Amino acid sequence: MGDARPILFFDSGIGGLSVLAPARALLPQAPLVYVADSAGFPYGTRSEAEIAGRVPALLGRLAERHDPRLIVIACNTASTIALAAVRAALDVPIVGTVPAIKPAAAMSATRAIGVLGTDATVRQPYVDDLAARFAADCAVVRHGSARLVELAEAKLRGEATTSADYAAVLDGLLSRPGGDRIDVIVNACTHFPLVAAELAAAAPRPIAFVDGGPGIARRIAQLTNGQSWPQSPAPGIAVFTRLDDRARRLAPALAAHGLDQLVEL
Ligand code: DGL
Image 1 (cartoon, helix red, strand yellow):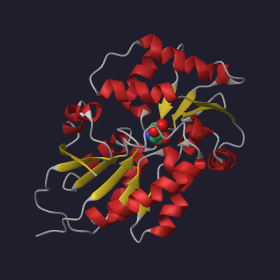
Image 2 (cartoon, helix red, strand yellow):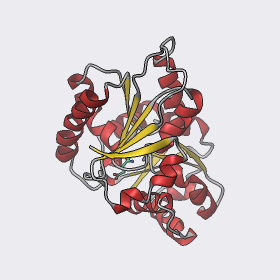
Image 3 (cartoon, helix red, strand yellow):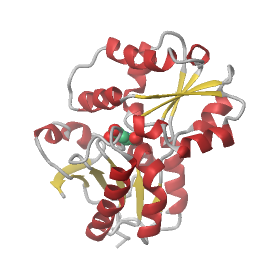
Image 4 (tube, helix red, strand yellow):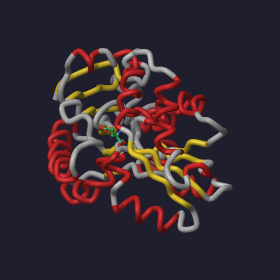
């Protein structure tokens, strides 16, 4: 018998699947609990106070219920606002998701990078700090898009989205001052890697897209190194804070990530 405690991934919606997928590839035996705070979605248009009040309390309840060995806040908005408070409140290792500005700056030839996140994320001092530490010689052009969060959710519900939708989002970033020089875009919201192919196809010129998912997966593997796992993990669980019809339409996308059981918190 191995250790059956799961890794718990937390996001406002399905964005955290872009972090869960590379982690699952590295740790196929890991029992998984994926939480979408659908009752609080979207986070990106909320205030700092709302996120800071909601996320630690919710994760406290979830930790009690699921006894995770590790919690991954698979949401840039929640991490850049509430990571320190969650770590202080819970006695479980917490991995956050913050904009991948460091690898983007290392890749950029033009020394101009885009940070595409939610409105709440792109205004955070946490992002100022990452830009100052890792991209001091780059123009760091930021753009918040609630629309792109909706497009990613729609795609995973199986709804049609168009190239023009993605082109309009990119134009919002590329038309900002300095945007014409951008050669790397940080997908600084976990929803956005889920539509990375659509974004790349809609880009007006070749632009590289980077996100934190693969790095976070390696960090999870490092932190759980030496721990035991069940021989055959139980089917993954997807927990919604509101399990309505919209959430149920995500079932095929969740099943494709090993999350076969949908429950309401
Ligand atoms: N997936 C979330 C992030 O990484 C936020 C999406 C939202 O709820 O606005 O920021």
